Length: 170
Length: 394
Image (cartoon, rainbow over all chains, first blue to last red; front, side, top):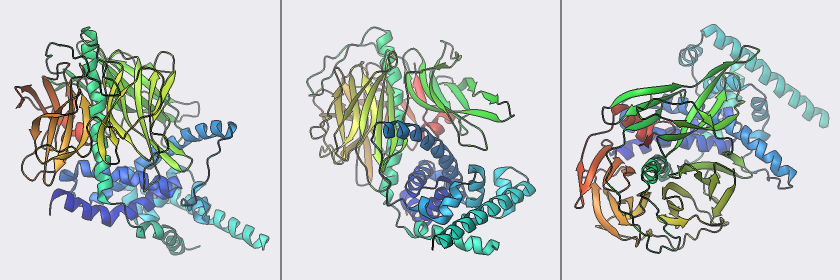
């Protein structure tokens, strides 16, 4: 199997998972797909070296998370443009294909600080242990536990509030 | 709610994304080509700069592909300086290509807010211009928020490679990210020889397909912007490079990759991709599909990659007629990865190419590429795969 063949197998096996992790940080599936594709593009560029890693997917995950944070910054910049466009009556239409922001969990995630969003993505979507997250993030295990507990409380509160709102509406 | 319940909820939330069929791997290959091309487009500008400084270049190819007046230029030595951005984006490294040594660095500033938050600046290299000038995008962020105001900066190196102060280019703004149903991405940036105009190629995607794209030419002096586009056509532009200060060569979709040339004098308007200078269908020695074009600063030649089957090559084309002139570099047998030109001197006689088997420098003489010194290892690494781009400047 050639260089691209090996890469393709790796790409097909890990793409969806990477999109999900990035989406948890970004709150947008479309942007998460763009970030995942960029992460795999970078992986392909150094595949001869990466393919010898024990867990090349960990490298892609890290790059995707970093890009997701950067992308979040760009989105904020775009929001400024969007505000100007709105002022000029050129309002962008919401994209029906990008439904993540409209799910209860997606909405709860959006309200988390980015650092906690990243933590939650690693713990619940990448299935990493607290110890592994602490090692990868270069913070103490206790700190990870505390932040995770805070994020969990926040999500639970958001979800219960939304459930309550739905019940009230009924 | 138990931890397992929450984990299950996340699993359900993520399942549609995990199950989705990924786009074909060719999408990733195409993005990688654009990444290489962006480096190439940015890098070649330094050469145009050399020509301008020498007062030797006054090239103006027309959008209608009229023959360009070629200017005789003296062959220049290999470019002495590269600027690369390290993985964190917080350090610019300056390299001497002759000695392969790092000659300087610029550490991104860290500022502390009143509340004690530390804000880091992160650089992305955009383009190289005249007189050892580099254009960089800088963003500011801390570790807990994603609030990151950004700006464009200019860095000038002294003759010995030592960096001057970072100067903000307040007239330029880059717009990327979500715009309506599209995600806008800047794929290529190139600076004119005199450092007065920045060309920016912005393409749009929605995760599965491309949308309308544009090329903007921004005056760094006045901030005025002229825009060219292919209307509502789903197309994209990348691998920008300048010849002189009024001719842009770039890769364009037609609908597959082709090479287009644009005369940027006058106001911006429509880019007709139906008549590219080098069409997709062009075949030379069994190779097709021109990609990653770089025009020489005097406007005489265009280097572009062609591929076919398990082989590829870097081919020199006439910028006047679009005809292939010679195969400059061919890949080792069964090596089908990308190989693109990064830099050529004003005469087109010195060339640097980034190829998977090592970035190559060399001289073209009587149609033969004679391999010279390899680029510094650190630059090699970043030229091919690093974040942002590595830039080459005279």
